[in-house]
Image (tube, rainbow, N blue to C red; front, side, top):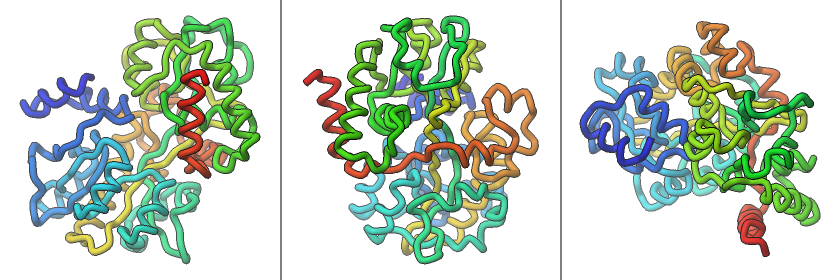
Length: 369
């Protein structure tokens, strides 16, 4: 949905679960950049304050918190993780922040966060092991990140408009039969990363020669693309209209398209599917540390996880969250009841060795120089 429509409905108090789902489906995410918790414009002094993405500030994720504390937590919303980092560096003081795993070392090195006491997390023993040992989230035997939501970036295609009888592969996005009918993200985090997987190189540690190879592949792909998408909503709208027949999407995009009754399928490429995980970090000197742990426990609960999976199409870190989700819904989302093997086999998103250079090369490639 358009951001102005989101703001208008929010101001009027008429936001529905579907509206929030549409905003989530844009998970670039929609650039709502102001506090929106429970209609409150400002944080309350006596509740935990979470600095997070739009769409994660809803009652379904803090039910046990409100039952224990008699009021909902407070939220401030950011447009992207880099904005969040700069705001906290400038003195903004939340209790929790919601980055993705590759950025945890940046927060720790800046002295902004503290280790999380996992003995205070009631469901920690149920967290998928692959998510408790993500690179850069443990230091000196301590846990500095609570994994929360995870997902995949892969090729999604219209099964009624694409003929694909081969093994799942990113190669579909280089198929000349669909020239002018495909799209990828205007972002190195998805488009360069998946091209590196397709090229058979380690996206996290590309040599100069390997980066050249990836850029050559992307230059070939560029000729076949209808557009580079700024947000996932650009892709889902174009795919729903039949303007494009294949594209990179996140899980939430597939969920949105299937909710519209469209015949789409997300591939699990033989080269490996890009997987990502975002979660919570605890601020050093958090003003409401005890209540911050209450919110962490609420977010990690099976009830919160069941909502996240069923409604947003995003995986949850707690294995127990999958227990009560129907087989049909999991099949629609192309998620197994036990995604352990899926997580273990994915190519976990990481920070490029020299991201500034990767961005510069990507922009140069698109410009045709």
